[in-house]
Length: 233
Image (cartoon, rainbow, N blue to C red):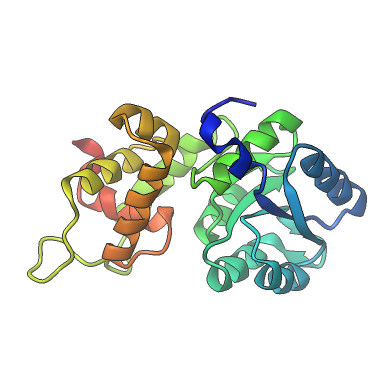
């Protein structure tokens, strides 16, 4: 595991995780590994309906979600969890690395996507980073997702409030700077290093920006920034 921030070691160990997979042996094995690595495994689930219901009840920091849930869809579970427990982040852990699966999961609201070939150490780091607000992807998939953000930005969609219109919420210079780097695909850790501020401060700026612009997640935030050309500045 990378020692990104020694000051948050104790807090990191209290990250609560819910594991969703329709294969009991795999699900229990992942839950056990996470528990041994210091996470609190708040719950497990094996189908779409129970995943959404239990997530609402336990409100974990991160839901580790398989896409193939047998009789149900992991994408439907993501949609249900994101809509009803917005503070919970969803990290997909799937055997599929197909581009259409990745994009569908991200559009549903997933914060990141790992394939099941990831090592235990990679999974641990991904869960911690997801809980901290980063978008985490198996190498090679991040560029795909950023490209999709750009494509979506060129399509008509629900308009976010325009900061240039009278009465619209105004971003501070620092919030705009952070937004520009988010649009370029940088992680919160990279933004913190670039701006010489703490990881927590980056998170706070992003949350403040989401609130001001009446947006709900990183996907909408990146789209907003790209529509305004902030990623090219």
